Length: 92
Image 1 (cartoon, rainbow, N blue to C red):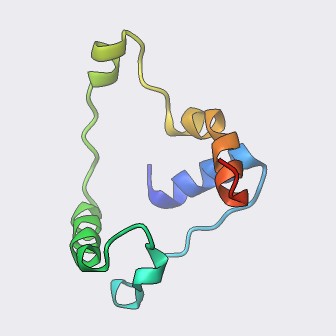
Image 2: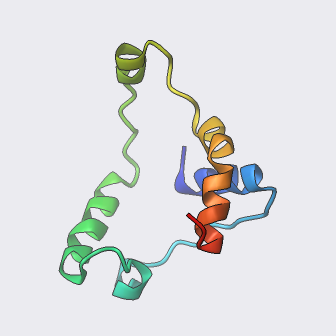
């Protein structure tokens, strides 16, 4: 599932129309990632870039550990819609 598809799934869970806008790495600033130490940002962006076009590894670890299959991202987003709302309003 692409990042754009993930954003769409979160938007559906929230009942809102959300868009994904890709920002070129050279335009990324530290204030976009306030929780990341500024010195680590280049390495994180490089790690993100390394995953572009790479198929994700799908494992059975969740089922093995929990005995229950993993949820889809869409189901996870729906299950966590209230968490997204709380984060957006600053309520925790």
